[in-house]
Amino acid sequence: MIATTLLPVAATRPGDATPADLERRYGAANYHPLPVTLQRGAGVWLFDTAGRRHLDMMSAYSAVSFGHGHPALVRVLTEQAERLAVTSRAFHTDRLGPFLRAVCETTGMAKALPMNTGAEAVETAVKAARKWAYKVKRVPEGRAEIIVAAGNFAGRTTTIIGFSSEAQYRDGFGPFAPGFVSVPFGDAGALEAAITSNTAAFLVEPIQGEAGIIVPPAGYLARAREICTRHGILLICDEVQTGLGRTGAVLACDHEGIRPDGLVLGKALGGGLLPVSAFLATEEVMAQFTPGDHGSTFGGNPLAAAVGEAALDLLVRERLSERARVRGDELLAKLRAIDHPGVVEVRGKGLLIGVEIDPAFASARAVCEGLLARGVLSKDTHGTVVRFAPPLVVESEHVDLAVEALAETLRSLDRRVA
Ligand SMILES: *Cc1c(COP(=O)(O)O)cnc(C)c1O
Image (cartoon, helix red, strand yellow):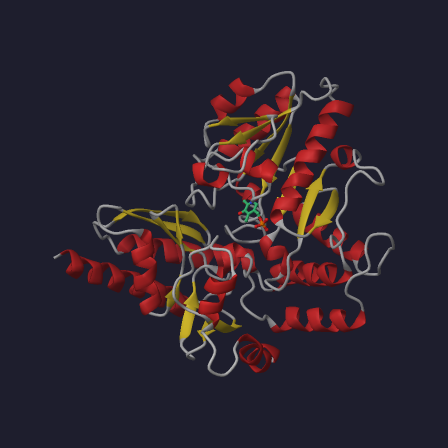
């Protein structure tokens, strides 16, 4: 609607370089986009400046779980924007309380602290865990440790990249904050062995997204829950990517029937329209924050709260978790049925699926370029994995289209090899 009339006019001038040229000319080169310039989105579809239609198999790393421009969410966004958008937390608004209740009731957590990006909510979790360790567990000042899993991705702030195991995320950005200990992902024994009297928390993604859709052994989270409880440390799950229906349950934690002490949500919480994140916790953990301890200019603003509440409502009303489970099983089975030697593994849960490509056959980037040529948009992760993580509103016909595009791409790369 609005986007189709405003965007092209604002983006280019007659005789100008292309918008992509302008990005290259005026932007930092911290991304390497595929050669397509998007202009409009509707549901599972994205449209480029040439008017070509593409199936979105990325959904902005799960941020667009509800599909592009969901009418109910756009209505809430525009109505709230006209009424009241940003006030700061110096005042109550009529939107924040209902949003906090909705996010707590949806997840079964006691309290929520709203932020904007996922990284900010993870930072909030780190602060909460440390203060809890000092004030409740009586860890000596400055000694609190947080255990993380190798391969983690929790955002790009300096503290967070400090506990990343990815060399490129760290290279040239140190010095890093101390207080983090890394253990192999999926290994509950290694977690238990790393716990000391100074351990505050174990921070973990139930499925590692950016690492390449790494699914841990069944029972891992349940064992981590038991170990954390027994040793008196907090279990904090980073569900920024896995949360809100993506894996076929409201939370990926639900698959193992556990509740963490701290929970991080983001991405889809903003309904694909704006950044909304939250740190959720038990009463005891959240009680560590007192006025002035922590904050955010935009966190919990009425616009974000209204859209977040509407997104949570939609998650339930459109049965998106169940649809992600059914459609995810279907997509997983059909991708596995391609059975091509260039595919090392197809793995995932719900609609969070990774296809690992044999690097001797082709780069994941080359596969993504082949998909793009066939009207399917995805992005490689770590050079070898192609993500299949569409909006959760995807239908069977879209699944078939994506699978056929991958099969054709692999065949075309066969011909190149031959
Ligand atoms: C994307 C992501 C984040 C960071 O979110 P941003 O909004 O990009 O800061 C944190 N944790 C996980 C698991 C993520 O996938």
